[in-house]
Image (cartoon, rainbow, N blue to C red):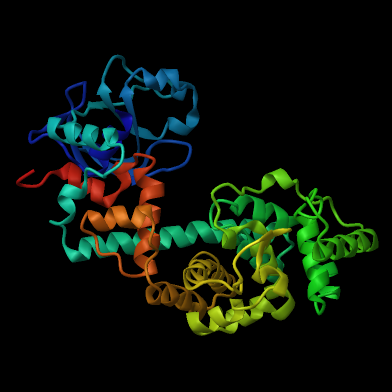
Length: 427
């Protein structure tokens, strides 16, 4: 209920009659203030007239007035700046720390808004707001999707920034770890990131010109050279011997546990063994990979950097001692697009912000707009609701919409939810 009161206050969905405080003081709301997502009063810098006296200050909102006492605001000087307490039910009077009473407004929620909000909250899958999507202007839809796209890029940039701090500001290492995470393609993302965090990059660099030794580093730190194989495999045994030598030479950290990897229901080309072999080939072939990515002007140029052939062993294997039909294990078109969307684009955007280079984050958004939309459950659902999903910019915006708003039932902060709650003729 409190979230709904926030919505009603923020959008000034007030009764069509004069407003009065519980002390029967005339109230005029000039500005509802700015929402505060952090600790403290709910809205900052509101402007009100109470009995013709102009007040500028903060607003706190509760379902019940007694929540003021229950939350200890009467003992917290941070709430002395509150000039109005908005409540659903005024079951008591409230005071500042010095004993001064705070004006209160009982704000009724229109029944139609309440009913539509209940519809949104109770929906399990297909978004009930789809009923209004076809009635929205192209500008409304475009502006919200653009905002969602930037919101998603901002979140990914924050994750990259935190990863960068853990690696002492090394962009090349941060890029490879981000790339490795996305080589998990969702299912094994956490395991790939944990694995990449154990890689001694400076040690690997000393042996970068030898693919077998790069593979030994990679498979060994992944814990995949500790498996009990049903038969002898010369390639596996050579990797194992190389890793033991490197482990002793560089005092390597402990590999991740093999039980971190998930294998169930994976196609052969998606097995961690194949993906690690592909990453080893990229690392071996593309010295200065991050610098090359920064210089790449088109998605096609990026794809060339990722298009490498792993060791010939993997042409007919997907696991040690487990064979697959002979086929070069290069990355497919869909996988390349996903790596650009989820790795290259946010890294360019983050690096552009770090360097204050508009060309880089403009290139990041241009890449999104030039790539085809992702085809997944979320994009298919919103496409079925009538939204146009053509580019990766569209699909990234809709993934953000689903994860940050729909899945959390945070319809009150969604522009589509706002339009639904307003109500339309014919609904």
